[in-house]
Image (cartoon, rainbow, N blue to C red; front, side, top):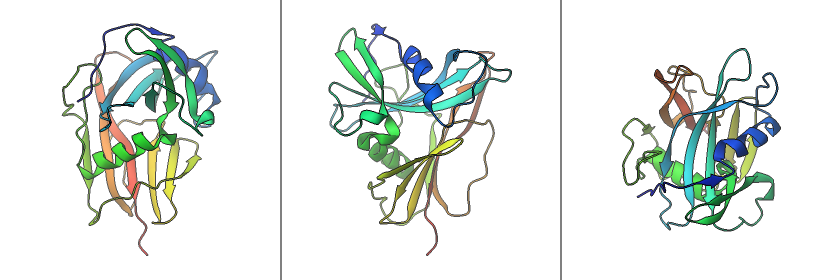
Length: 218
């Protein structure tokens, strides 16, 4: 079960993201540097208990209209070989020491556990409380076979990141720019994940699609 340490991070996660987000093609520039507020998210467990997995939502209030972003992150105790371009930054953790934070779309551990969540084989965990499931994260899967974890091609779009399994003709889309409400699922969707985040007033919660698994009909 996910363990959340009550300690310091230098720099903080959102300080790292303030530098990293403007380099992404799906970032919506505001006025000046991003002004980020933590808005929600959840965690998943790594079965090997080596990699921290977090689906973090931050809201940027720098522009005329606030924008909520989904940022899947992994935290590792050593660099992930071959993932230099996916490095968000490094942090000094008060308990665990130096941690390498990666864009989780490029981390096979996060991808495998997200697919497990879609299929109902993994339980989402509270973002801030140790060993506590998050009942507000919902998933569904209508396929008739286990989903392979060979999503090796990553494509950045204007408002999403797509992972493709060329061998199986499947696509896993993570919505980077979050929109409140029940987004319409594509006709070829066989699985999805929805969750919540807080609106800029700090008290109102909304929810929407975080991820969609699609399997085109052959």
